Image (cartoon, rainbow, N blue to C red; front, side, top):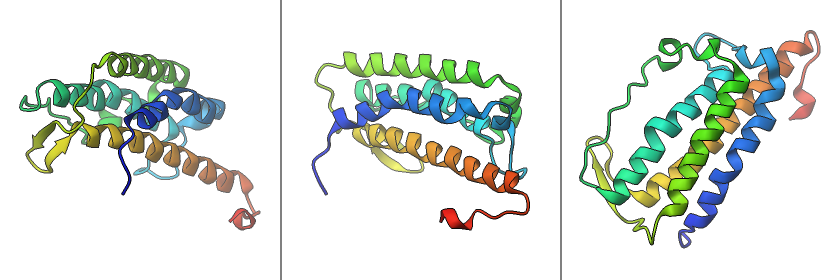
Length: 170
């Protein structure tokens, strides 16, 4: 395992708004499409990213850096897409909301003076989670959801292929 590089992780966070816009916005109305009832649409994924920015990664990372013993606000993710009407929202507005939230997060990260990435919050189920763990997970979370959106693009190609198949792509 190598040495941690928080600057590289933050750089990945910086790239996400443009990447998300380029990947999801061209979908238009297809951003609402779901291959099945249990799978999130691209729009729902974008909504989730904006909410996670506001309610999870930014506040929890800053809390861990500043007051690692402070309790985190609980997250209620059970059926969150349905409860919050994610698939009814406007994709362009959601992506702009995410961009604003990410910019606020980046501003907070850039303002940190010599952060101690080893500060740890003790999670009741997961045990100690260091600030550096949260930063790395944040960048990985972005990538995981980009992968989900790419999967929706593959699903859409299958849907639109009709009698043709897409196996040549793989």
